[in-house]
Image 1 (cartoon, one colour):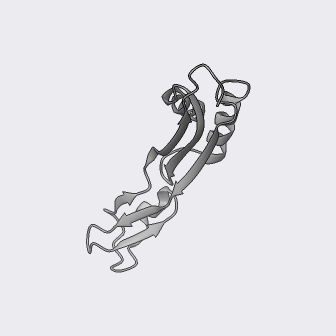
Image 2: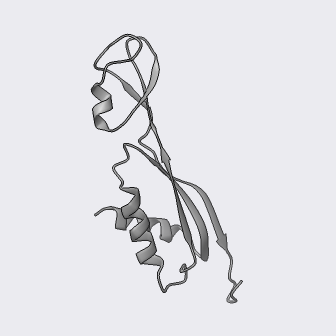
Length: 116
């Protein structure tokens, strides 16, 4: 379960008290959002980031046909081999979005030895 190491990496970024972190996760990123949420909550429980919230934003798959240039959406790996809705081409689609796994927003409080 690599979601645990991803959750730990997210927490390693916050040096003080983490309040909120938003992670964008592409449909083809290879991450199970519910598992990542579970792992994050397990890691923060009882620690300095216990009140931290993880917001997961799913980035849908968007493909571009290499034959005609049409962009279209799809779901899962099988979308890479579905016909282009404009020209019918079956192969060569480029992933425009959907592979992302990135932190898009972070809120943290500087404790300075005192609780805020």
